[in-house]
Image (cartoon, rainbow, N blue to C red):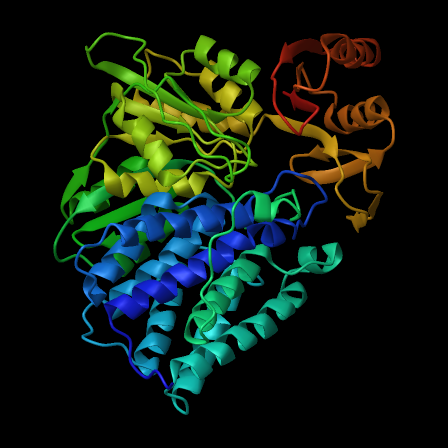
Amino acid sequence: MKQTHLDGQLLKEMFINGAYELENNKEAVNALNVFPVPDGDTGTNMSATILSAVSELEKLQDVNIKNVCDAISMGSLMGARGNSGVILSQLIRGFAKYLKAKEVITVKDFAQALKEGVATAYKAVMKPTEGTILTVARETADKAIEIAKKEDDFKIFLQKIFEFSNVSLNRTPELLPVLKQAGVVDAGGKGLTLLYLGFYKFFAGDIVKKLSKEDKKEQVKYDSIDTSNIKFTYCTEFFIRTKNADPEVFKEKILGYGDSVVVVGVDELIKVHIHTNNPGLVLEEALKLGELIKIKIDNMKEQHRSITSDTPQEEIKFENKVDDAEKEYGFISIAYGEGFKQIFEELGVDAVIEGGQTMNPSTQDIFEAVKNINAKNIFIFPNNKNIILAAEQVKSLTDKNVIVIPTKSIPQGITAMINFNPEASVDDNKEIMIETLEKVKTGQVTFAVRTTVIDDVEVKEGDFIGLYNGKLINSGENINEVTFRLIDSMIDDQSEFVSIFYGNEISEEDAMVIQNYVKERYPHVEVNVYYGGQPIYYYIISVE
């Protein structure tokens, strides 16, 4: 039967079908690792993001187009995890914003909504990388406009959309050399094609059911790394409450003040994110538009999450370390491993959200932590480049004054916290913390999940591999030799301190072997060993 129009109920059911198609195949997305390491998360992040939208849909009493669009827009924003999840939420937001005023939706409306979603996502990312989910979304939306001129049946239209999205996906290695070298397509783009497939299946009469854990046991167990190339410097984030301002005009005004500029308008709020050395100048420009919404927080003690999203998340529990009196500064850190958690707490961090590369916390998770810290100014240490964007989304949900320090590793977060000065101002502390990040070198030792060649380094499945600031350095069958060579590549004449954090599969005696090597070979540095308790990474090494 030909389907030429959608109402709210059909839109809802189609969206859920797409969401379950993505959820059921997230491990196939996760398997598209650029690096052969078991620590990625693109499929998991995209699935968690869209299932949050499904959760909002299931709460609807009045299922009309406007309510469905509002539900998927807000739900995906609240559930957004990682760069891929945030970008997906912005694609959905623009899509929903265009459709929400429609009485019924035609194929032409749907195609234009895809275009609007792409425009919204590109605006949210200051320096979009081609060869990623953004490229697949843009090229597919352009094709959708062409198809809609000739085809008015949703089944045929969406079939062609899905087929073309795969053509676009298969071209991503030609646009992004790191994909070509690894022999994979873009993971985020793959996730998007699965969403389109689920949409098509709905009109083809193939209703997708969410698989149980048992049904998924044969799927690949390793996640993929989101490879968005975002560089961070000085992070400033806030919201402007205004009725008439144009986010695009404001973005143009502040481009000269820094990098990684994100300006997103949601109803009467403008969310602003910029890395800059002059936050005061940015705020002065913002004040010309309206009221700035700042941040204030209470205290979250602990959040438990399993390594894979298949395991239900435990209830978030909060425990205040101080009385009800509001203090000047509060701190949130994302970390994994009991040892790292204890280290951050001993340094004065109020809330340690359990998470990291394999389990990015959602916007909702970080928002709950923000609500529960009773302080005038709150610093957030994401400790992972794939968590920073999700943290930024929190700003549109709260009026507290939050500062996100763009830490990309746990050692950077520890160093930033050590350099905090309670007597200094917020701006001075931000500047000090940002400056210290450049001095921290981070190394990681893990294992390879497949045979490949990356940056001229040959890797065999099961090998131990060394990573230095995210770059593959070496591989081998002996973990000590791999660790020694990694450390050799990190230490130079200016190095003063080496910290070795050993994981939950390494004994203290094993870690002491590494410490003794450093002491003997590099007598000019001070070396210390700490229990991190982290999974997946046998060692995380910091050199300063």
